[in-house]
Length: 213
Image (cartoon, rainbow, N blue to C red; front, side, top):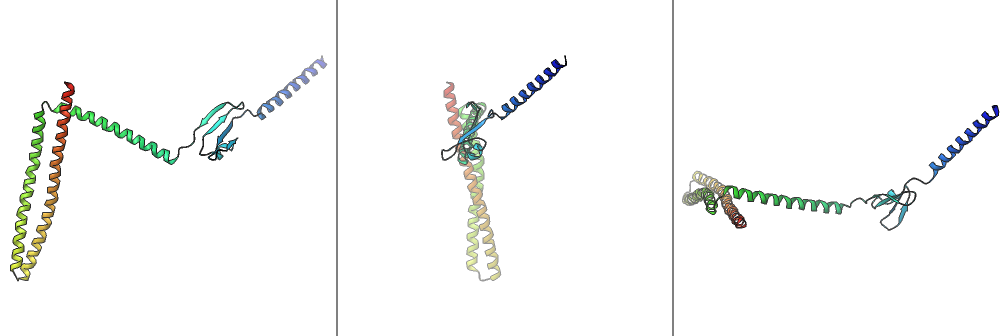
């Protein structure tokens, strides 16, 4: 009975030792993944250093049997990143313009019932701006006459005090004229923009009406 127990214990120890050895062999076997890549010069690299050697290339991870486990794409170059950003910006701009165009169509159809309504709105806005243009032109015309009078008096007098006053008045008048000239240019531009905007609105309105049929 004692011999049987001893034999069983020896057998157990042998089995355990074999299991430990097998585990060690499994752990030490090349079952881990292997990385490979091709560098910029076309040279292939394998193993743990592949990623370092090919940091700007595509890296492929293989199983111990040579099957592809994972592929890591090469990092994008600055030129690729810039190109993709420009392409994305173009797509977004086109989409925004398309959305704005659709909104403009809906707006035009919602506020105009007839073509004459567009003309009436245009004329009202142009008339308002033209009124300001007329005021500025009249002011500039009067200021030009005033400066001409000052210059005439300046040429006719020998009084130093009066000359100084006239020269100052001329300078101040010219400054005001420059300011009003800039305002007049802005008003003229505003008028041109109104005419162009309503021209496009009428074209869009007529096109939409023709589509509706």
